[in-house]
Image (cartoon, rainbow, N blue to C red; front, side):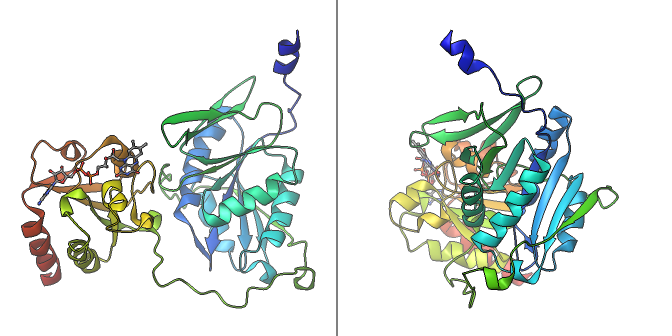
Length: 341
Ligand code: FAD
């Protein structure tokens, strides 16, 4: 009897729609926002509801247009000077207000520093939970309309699907690079609704005095070209060769977990199940065998070039171009060829 009572679903019929938070800095949206709109479109179509975008910032009306072109039906736009830099309180106040008014059944954020902070701040004010760092999203359509939010668990050894059965909205953060943005369609039509910022500058306790970009910080998930190295490099020194090739191509250096665990390069460079999921235009895998835990992090790259002296290395199964040979000969020759262009 008790279990049947627990399984009874409350009536959530006034909650409809899938909402995506569009994260931006200085007017530039993070790729994960467009990727989430792409995935959100599929969820919204399955549930037969609107896809809603939430844009917060200053001078960000262009992003509202972009959100429609990437699949949103409706955009809530809060554009004010006090929303220029991300600050938890003013952003969460706006987001909470919109969520309470609009009542979306699902709200999604990128699992970035900002997305995690904002989603957490919002969840503490709503009678709901938050599933963090999802890599698979799906919905069970009528009648439950449940978000099936899956994420790696138990040291990434299994995939857990987490359900928010008794509360709305269902909220989740999702990893960058996992989902695909829909093609940009400037002919798409949608509605933009303006929202006020709710707090004046005087009412906000925190000030951003200066934004200092860390010089050693790079955004692997946002990179268009990644030159990644693995155990085949044999030590930290050869990563200089990869850096030279990356510099010549205008890309960044990535790594397999074997190289990171060996201490040859920092964890911020790790691609794969326990590292970053990336989706660059070009991924060059050098001295990387292609273990499944590495492949899940990079196999959606547009073009993959693999360099390995073992012609049977599994990485070649996902590669568009295979170069079989010694990396110590091939990488400097490639760099030279790129520089010569
Ligand atoms: P290896 O498998 O040792 O491959 C080295 C390759 O270099 C070989 O194919 C070899 O032929 C080639 N090579 C050697 N010398 C040369 C040369 N001179 N020229 C050309 N080729 C050469 N791995 C990740 O990468 N990312 C993750 O996020 C990740 N998460 C994991 C999570 C879990 C729970 C577990 C259990 C494992 C995880 N792993 C992850 C580890 C993964 O299983 C592999 O051990 C790892 O990816 C292997 O790294 P590698 O390809 O660099 O090394």
